[in-house]
Length: 356
Image (cartoon, rainbow, N blue to C red; front, side, top):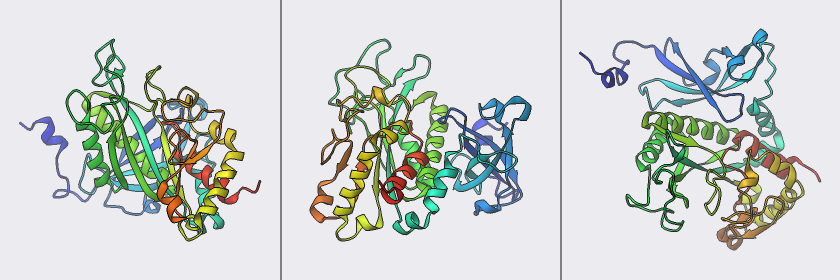
C-alpha cells in the first residue's frame, strides 16, 4: 500500500499532460487568502491563456447570498512548490460578472496607477520587508515562549542562532526555498527582535509585480505553517508592552532617484509624502497605531519625520544613498498586515503623479 506521503508526492508528468492550477485571491477581510484548484489540459506560462473562474463571494464576505458569484481574473503565474512538476500557483483579482472590480479588489486600482505613462517611465522599484510572528497553535502565544509566561527581554534574539533564541527556523528556511522555487524574487530572511518573529524580503520588484510576489509569498507561508501546525500572524503588535511590533518596511526608488542627482529627487518625494502623511497612515494597515508609538524603532503615528540612517523616523534614507547622491529610501510606516498593492501604488502616485 502507498503511504499518504507517496501519493502527495506523485509525479504526474509521466502519466498525463494535465496540470493543476491553484487559483489564489484575497478574501473579504483584505488579509485572508483563499484558493481552490483547477485541472487544466496542459502546461501554461501566460496568465492571459488561463480561463477565468468563479467562486461563492457570499462565503468570503465579498458578495450577497442572492447574487454571490465573483469572477477570478488570472494575473500572475508561479511554479507550485507543493505539487511541483508543471503545476502552478495563479494570483488572481476579483470582479463582478459584469466585469467591474469588486470593492476589495485593490490590484485593479494599483495596476491603473502603474500603467500610467509617467509612472511606467520611472520604473518604480520596491523592496518589501515582511515581518510576521509564529504562534503556538492552541494557545496563540509566540513560538518558543513558555505558555502563559515570557522569555527574557529583547536583545539576544535578532538574527540569532541557538535553541534558546531562534524558534521556527525550519518553517522559515522551508519558506525561503519554496519562494525561490516558485519564481518569487525573495532576497533574504532574518530572525527579528522579538523571539518567535521573523522577516523575509521580496524585491527588488518593479511595479505591480511587487504586490503579486508578496501576496503569493504570504500564501506559501500560510501553507507551510499549516503543514507545521503553527499559526501565522501578521498582527502589527502581537504582544503588548516592551516588545517590538511587526511592520512591512517598503524600500522604494524611481529611475530618476537611481541616477545622478537622484538625492534631490528623493528629498522632494519625501516632502510630498509628508504632506499626505495622514492619508498614507490610513491605508497602511489595521491596528498600526498599536505599533507606531515612537518606541521600538518607530516614529509616532501622528508625526512625520525623515532622517539618514534613523530607524526612529517615518522615512529612513541610507548612508550610501546620501554618500552617492542617488539611490532609494525606506518608508518605515506600513504595518505587517498592509496590502502591498495599496502601499506600493500609493507611494508611486504620491511621489510621481500627485501635484501638491
